[in-house]
Image (cartoon, rainbow, N blue to C red; front, side, top):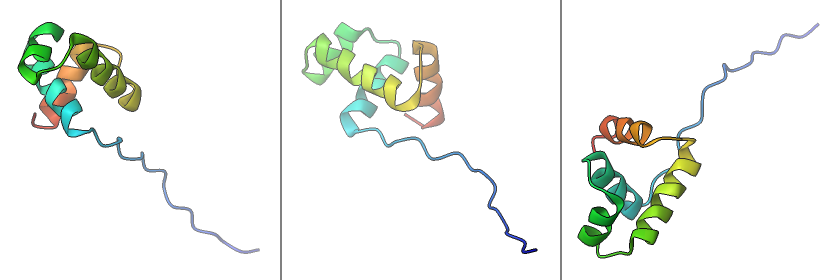
Length: 76
């Protein structure tokens, strides 16, 4: 009988966010609306919405509160 050592399951790291996704997240976490964020970033509010949808999909986040908590934990 042979013994095999198994490594403990470690969660994989969250996918990296693109710089513009990080910027949009920072604005939303600061309490800005999608429109305010879009104006500050020089984008349409639809583009900001797309960035935030991508963040939610990448990280499995469902609410703005969770996004804000993530931004704080990332130091944004």
